[in-house]
Image 1 (cartoon, rainbow, N blue to C red):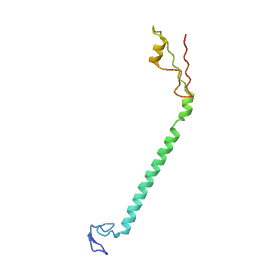
Image 2: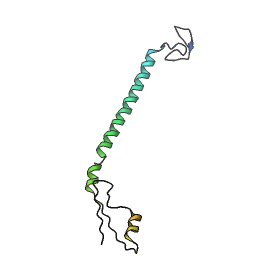
Image 3: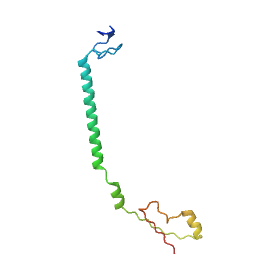
Length: 108
């Protein structure tokens, strides 16, 4: 038991501060705890920096990759329906979802 010099409260042995009034009882122990927390924090920050750098170097340039790849879809199907009915079912494919995508629709 360690008695607080300010309030007289009997604290547990090796207490860093008084449980009653908060007076620091063991400065060396407190400094040890602070240094241990700082070390753990600096290790964690270093790991985060390494992970961020790793992600940055290993992440492909998505914009360049998207421009480099081009997907072309082509299909043909004959149906015995009026043109208006077919287009109402399929939608308007002459309208591209993006300015970078070109859509060509051929009608015979």
